[in-house]
Structures are given as structure tokens and as C-alpha cells.
Amino acid sequence: MRKALIILAVTAGILTIMAISLGMGFIGFQNTCKDFEIQIEAQYTDNQNVYDNGYKEVLEKSEVPEMYTDQLKELYSQVMSGRYGEEGSKALFQFIQEQNPTLDAEIFRQIQQSIETFRRRFTQAQRELVAKKQAYQQYYAATTSGRFYNMLGGYPKADMARYDIVTSGRTEETFSTKKDEPLKLR
Image: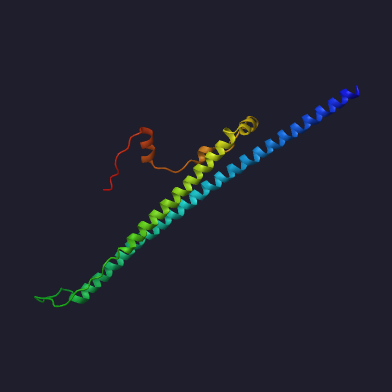
């Protein structure tokens, strides 16, 4: 009888240790899944931030040439009016070397650089989001312990489709039809 009690106590102890281990493993699984979901949501929010700031920067810089052109027109009108008067020059030959105001192309280079920087930063942010989603999916669906614990946990809890990358209609059409055409710049 005493031997049976010892075996029963040892068995109960082993089962208790196994239950605690499984419980702790499940808690760790849940915590990791929640951490992944928080990271994915934060990355998505960062993508919105990168896109918003890049978009605004490009818009703000592109307004500069318009303002610059307006000022140049006004200046040019004043220069011509001051140079030739209201009715223009009546001279048969104008022996002056004219130096007309010009539009600086550097402004347009800066706009192009802003666009390129914006696109690079946004592409990188999108890649980071894809990588985090992939790592999360791999964790809960492709590992043995993840699949086991996920039978109890039912992850992902968050709607992962909400965190899809931003794309264009042209890209969606190309991937759905599996056909693409050369880019037309003009």
C-alpha cells in the first residue's frame, strides 16, 4: 500500500510539473503572439507616418517652384518695363547686353531627390511590415509548439489583413491579370 502511495504521489507530481510546464509554455506563447501583434500594429502606424511626412514634404517642395515662377514673372515684368518703358524700345539697335532672370533647375532636382528619398523610406517601411507579419505567421503556424498551443489560443487575434501593404491599382491589376505593359512616361 505504501508503495502504491509513493507511485501515486510521484505520478501526481510528474503530472503537476507537466501541467505547469504546459501552462507556462502556453502563457509564453500568448505573450509572444501579443508582442508580434503589437509590433505589427506599430510598424503599420510607422508606415502611415513615413508616407504622410514624405507626401507632405514633396507637396511643400513642389509649391516652391510655383511661387518662384510667380515671383520671377513679376520681376521679369518689372525688369522689362524698367528697361524699355511702357511702349518698349524705339531704338533700331539695342546696344545693351541683356541679362534676364532665369529659373534655377536646382529646385526641381531637390523635388526629385525628395520623391526618391520618400519612395525609398516607404519601401523599406513596407518591407519591415511584411517581414514582421511573416515572422509572426511562421511562429504560430509553422513551429510544432506554435501549432500545438495555437489549437488552444486561436491566433492571430488581430485582423492581419488590416495591416496589408499599400499598393496601387496598377499593381493590383498587373498581379491579378499576370500581365504587364512597359511604363509610359509621357
